Length: 78
Image (cartoon, rainbow, N blue to C red; front, side, top):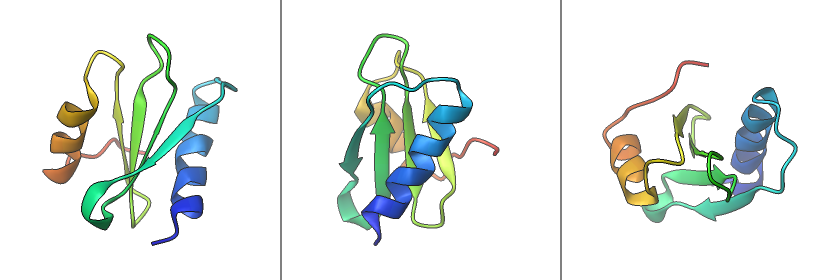
């Protein structure tokens, strides 16, 4: 899995949201992909799968809730 490539996908989506903030990246368990997040209130998380499909989760949802939805196959339309 190319963590850097997947992280750049998440960063590009955050750029579309108009944020140029410092983002954090976390590799997901079991090689599922990565999570890119903006660590502020209202920042949100973008889970990126190996196929570059994504799930955006608002900052109101914690990481584990977002990961569970991502594991279930939920995705945000591009």
